[in-house]
Length: 126
Image (cartoon, rainbow, N blue to C red; front, top):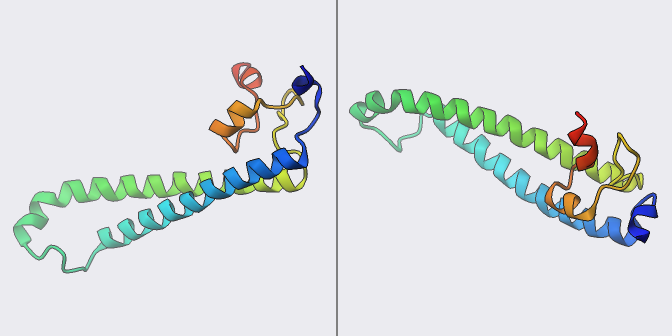
């Protein structure tokens, strides 16, 4: 009952979310670096495949993979930016407050989507 009457999360709760977000951010940066490396290798003048036949057969797949890797890298960077914005909201003590309703976003939702700025209720109204 008291959960719904609160206007913001306590400092201890915010710290719990900060740790969760930092962990996700570290993983996201790691994933982003892997995608960037994959993209660089796809540009490739590396010698990992020197067979001309292989090149010809795989050309279509390589192009597709490069486009996918590019899109994934962009999506990953956007995710990183959302997580960084969530850390700023923790600093401002506005983290977990729905930007539509002004109510607290349930902890379960924030644990699943730590960069959420809308409650399920507000999201459903979109």
